[in-house]
Amino acid sequence: MAIVTTGVAATGLAIMRGPLISATLMFIASTLNIRLRKSDYHGLAVVVSGLGIVASCWFAAALLGITFDFPAIWAGTKSFMVQMMSYAPADYPATLP
Image 1 (tube, rainbow, N blue to C red):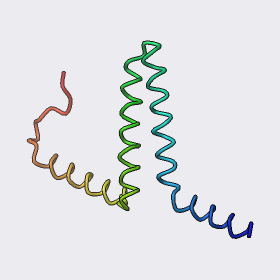
Image 2 (cartoon, rainbow, N blue to C red; image 1 turned 180 degrees about the vertical axis):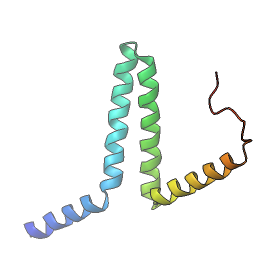
Image 3 (tube, rainbow, N blue to C red; image 1 turned 90 degrees about the vertical axis):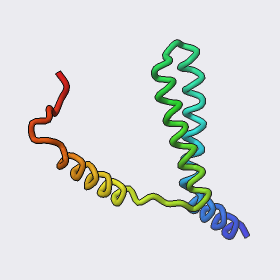
Image 4 (tube, rainbow, N blue to C red; image 1 turned 90 degrees about the horizontal axis):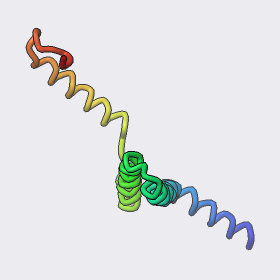
C-alpha cells in the first residue's frame, strides 16, 4: 500500500511540476516585492513584480494545458525582425546620437 501511495505522489509531482514551480516563483516574487518596497528599493520591486506576473501567466497557462514552443517563437520573432530591418533605408542610423 505504501508503494502505491508513493507512486501516486511521485506521479502527481511529475505531472504538476510546472504549476508547482510557477506557484513557488509567485510566492517568492510576492515576498521579495514586500521586502524590497519596505527597504526603499522600488526599482527592484517593480522588476520582481514583473517576474511575479510572468510566473502567474505561466501558472495559468499550465493549468489550461497551453504549452509554448520557445524555439519556434524565437525563430518567428527573428525572421520578423530581419524582414522589418530589410525595409529600412540603407543610410538609416543604427543608433541614436
